[in-house]
Every structure is written in C-alpha cells, then in structure tokens.
Image (tube, rainbow, N blue to C red):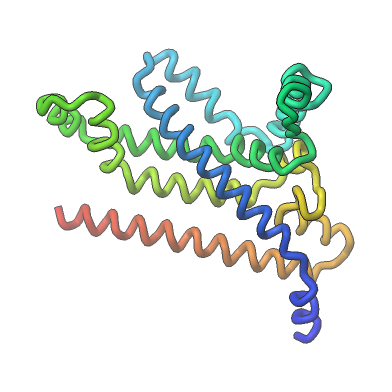
Length: 234
C-alpha cells in the first residue's frame, strides 16, 4: 500500500491530461463532421451511399496501425501535403499533439458517423412530412425535428466516440509518437511502463482507464434508460 501511495505521489499526470484533451477535441470534430456526413450520405443515391459509407467506415475495421501508416504517409514532411502545411502554414502534424488529434479523430469518427446515421434513419418520416406541410425549410426540419428526435442516438454516438478517442493507441503511436508531456497518452504510457517491467505503475494507469470507461458506460446506460422510459410512456 505504501508503495502504491509513493507511486501516486510521484506520478506524472500529463498522459491523463493529454488523453482527455485529445479525446475532447477529437470528439468535437467528429461530432460535427459525423452529423454533416450522416445527413449528406442519407440524401445520396443508393449506389453512391454504399461507396461513401464504406470509405467513411473503413477506419473502424482497419487495424489502427494501418490507418496510422497512411496518416504518416499523408502528413509526413516529405510528402506534398506535409510540405504544404509545414512550409506555408507552419503546421506540423507528425510528432506533435496535433498528430494525436488527427489520429484519434480518424479512428473515432466512424463511430459518430454510424450512430448519427442510424439515429437519423429511425426518425419517423411522418414528422418530416408534417414539418414540410407547416412550411418549414429542410434546414429547419433538420434542426427542429430530426436532430432533437435522434438526440439519444446522437448522444450515445458522441460518448462512444469520446471513449474510442481517449483509448486510441496504434494510429497515435505511428503519427504522433510517444513524446513525454507532449504526445504521450495513457495507452502509450501503459505500454512503455510494461516494457520497463513496472507492472505496478501500469496497473495504476489501467485502473484509471477502467474507472473512466465505467463512467462512460454508466452514462450511456443512464441515457438509454431515459430513452426506454420515454418509449414506455407512449
């Protein structure tokens, strides 16, 4: 017990803050992009919808290291996009916190997109027709009818997106590296201390991740419970 307290007192908490900041920013980006793309895909033709949906969902089924490899090729300072960003805008993606955000967003985005699209597709079409009958524009119908009705599904997708972004490891390691105090997330920290044979520190970080994951699942269950209670009333 004394050893645990000693480790906690001297623990570098930067991986937790880096993970939380990365998760929040990646979730915000994925939230807006997910809603926009979900609405756009729903309005596409059947064939185009299948192609676009496959491309947007691909990061979810690919190994994170594969996604990280493609991101590394894309944003490397030896590649056209990386050269453009660095030389003209002084933006460095590789080996930076921005790389953590990009990697986490790419990996977590499909969860937001899939949940948002599923929630939108479950909205009663009669509500949309009623909005059109009342003279509402398509944009007004989306924000006043579709989005509020699909709210529980969108919110669940947001929570899952945050959880995925928080625990991202493979793509982040490839793109952002593992720089202490800069790009070292909780997942990377656990891997490093295990390699050093420090299982006690790894266990402490693992316990922290488990507690965060439990809070996320608890929050999702609370949201689902409220939604089911609302359905039962009807």
